[in-house]
Image (cartoon, rainbow, N blue to C red; front, side, top):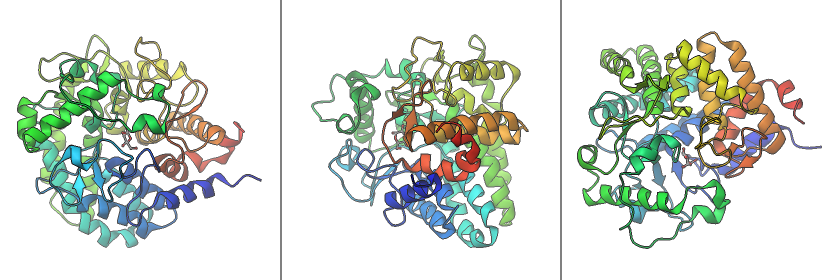
Length: 420
Ligand code: GLC
């Protein structure tokens, strides 16, 4: 008899646990990643609430003095990963990367706290000021043009989605010098970014190093600056959650309310009327990316949907069978198995579904949960899936896929049985 999927999911979390922090998966991602950790905490909370809070602690322990929480924390150097701490060269201890990642931590902390308020109160009180400082950093450093901006596609967490193509075009990757990628040694190269793209990723890191990771200077003069709808919506949502948590702890939350109002008022700047959807925008020249994808659809998590966007949502979703695709299946750039250019990502589905439930769209939540559960029940706890046939893609035994099975996708096992 095959092992119960819940038990498998718990074993994946335990197996990826490095004692206080969790790897996304062995091999491909041997460090602590920012938003992966927040989802890991949510998963741990279903069976070990203290361990869930530990995950936030280790993540926030590497917060920079500026308030930024880095996207990777290199706890123990592992030569199988590139670009490692020597390439980022940020001078932090433990070593970290020099960019951030989508700030889902406050949202996940609220979910974890709600699962056991008594156990969570003091743990929450400890991390609350750090979360506020991180949100402040986003506003002071990355939201200077209105919406949340990113200085590297990796900061978006949706690494090589088509949203960034127009910004990447302006980056010169011809002078990065020789290096050896490691990702293509772990997974099928056809699922990973092309070399020309990778050269540009490294060029952007080298620029950061050249200015000593002065984030304001990178925003002002760096090779890449784009408004990210995904982070804008995640941050908006996280502000709302942080306000609730602040009130519980008896803090004055007016500063956060101010940020939330400011960010919401910037949403028209990322609405592409020609596309009829939110869209990424190159802040160096004002141009829109002109592609519909996961960033726009994260609007639902921040209660920023509208009837025009709803039509796109249903259109792209109806075109596939296993969850919401990360790019428009009817667009030229769609690629069902290549990183962020089409596949369905279970953890992102879980995030969007959070928004559906709050809008009272339990029908959409149920559909998304069923399709996500079917993909996992069919082909395991993969990093992501081909949205047409649920082929498992990327790394296996993935932390966030296991976490969202325990918290959301696996809630109704009847759904999963339909796929067996
Ligand atoms: C990839 C993903 C990013 C994630 C990381 C670890 O870089 O694009 O979102 O955090 O892998 O899972």
